Length: 150
Image (cartoon, helix red, strand yellow):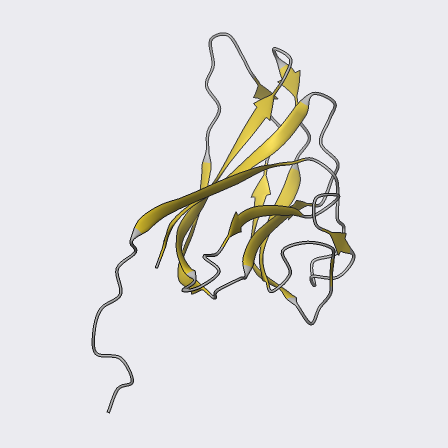
């Protein structure tokens, strides 16, 4: 017999985002300090957890026509919401190669990159993101998570 025969629906939206700029060259969850080289994108509801539908990645800039470098953006789930990450508490779930591009252009729009996730994030856990290469001056990769709280 199943443990839960009733569908779960979120009660409210949970949208979080972070500008990812500093490099973390590990992909195993180690070597990160949240807010320094691995960034909190979404914090799950502390009581019931959250649903994460997808992550959208956009290049952003604070100065017009600023070029970025190609890199890999990594998405993790973690029981840590602050401090240092380790392989025991932070787990890589997705990564995507992002090409070099020029942000904040006057006549050309940049592409966004969606990473479908579709899973429940446990209560008190966080969705984190990092980049393998440091962003150029005045640029960042804006990682936005779309989901809902239970």
